[in-house]
Picture 1 (cartoon, one colour):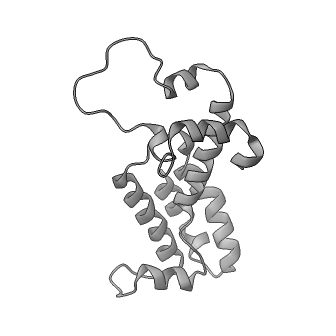
Picture 2 (tube, rainbow, N blue to C red):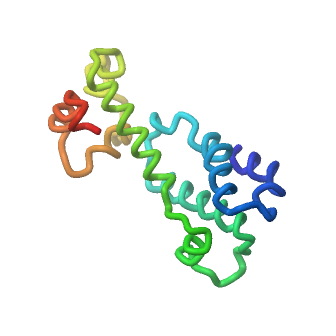
Picture 3 (cartoon, one colour):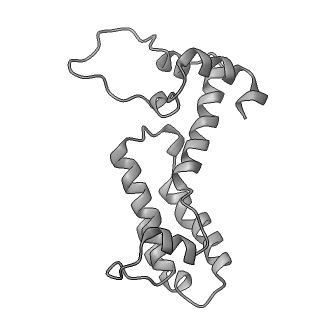
Amino acid sequence: MAKKVFKDKRKLFTGKMNLELKKRIVKCLVWSVATYAAETWTVREVDRKKIEAFEMWIWRRMGKISWRDKITNDDVLKRVNEERSLLKEIWHWKHRWIGHVLRHDSFLRGIFEGRMLGKRTRGRRQMQMLHDLIVNSDYVTLKQTAAERTMWR
């Protein structure tokens, strides 16, 4: 859907407009469609690669750089004076939303903590939403830091 939005406005993004203005419009129009409800996603490695590829596709199209040209992604990012930031923003939104959920006693918090009734399904456990945030720490420290808003931010 986000590619469709970009293609619909292709003349605007590949025209002779100021590059900074183009980037702001892309972040407003295209990324809002691409990252709709991203704070609730379970981002796997496959999803990470697709998000990064989509971001690079946008910057290449804006810079009028063909995929057949032997130009690395780093060079493309230097030309448009940008960094890879889509995954960082998704992680930031997810971090804020998880902190909000953990500070309140709600149904979602019960789901995160595994207080659901019934029998677990057969097979390997599915990747959970918290796996992205719990990389170097455990759930208890995540919950304690979420309780204090100033430390969480």
